[in-house]
Length: 80
Image 1 (cartoon, one colour):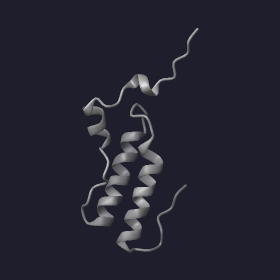
Image 2: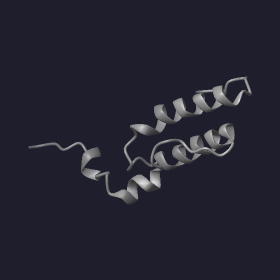
Image 3: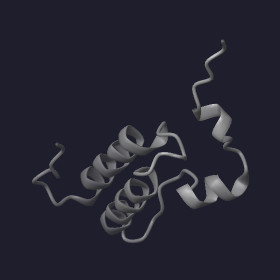
């Protein structure tokens, strides 16, 4: 389990939050039941660390609404 760094310097905390977002959210399929919750969590921590800046990637909701994500892409197809 990841723990937040002891430092309160905004730059290090923001970099850490972005790294955690990329690690836990970026490549997680949009259909994954935990993706939205993790996206929201790391975005909140990043906003808090930066004074309101946003993570420079689409939010989970924006990704789903954009149609750029297809359920078929995340589904393993087995041919018989």
